[in-house]
Length: 149
Ligand SMILES: [Zn+2]
Image 1 (cartoon, rainbow, N blue to C red):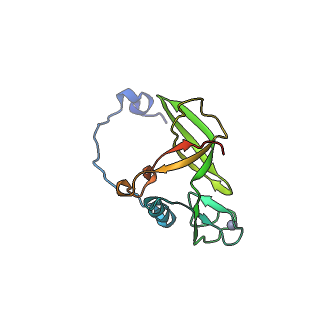
Image 2 (tube, rainbow, N blue to C red):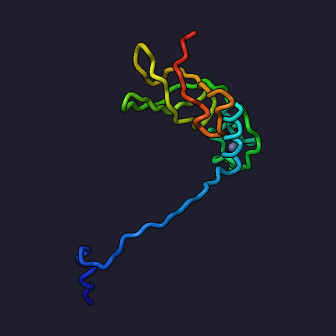
């Protein structure tokens, strides 16, 4: 059995170019909704497992360790630490982890006026003014370096 010419030589295959106009809404889900509502209120919410006590960020509806429904949401203090980062085009994006929390947030970090970003620097979330918040991750305008105390 031989393949048709169009399958051996794709430049000879019959085809057409078209587009499909699609619009969609992506559901944030139960825990994503709570997370978004928290951001709008200027809070970073995580979920806490009632069985193992582990806290997750972003919040998860079920504990990935115990497979237990997580109905408890806890406010995570907006102070974290740079776990990793990348810089390009004058901007810095970092994975920020929070003490006692599994997971973290990837977000913009305001570059320091002096010195360089580095792993382990302590940062804090700077929320937009309440009237500008939309209930998404951009409600945190950026993270900034915390001065050592
Ligand atoms: Zn658990």
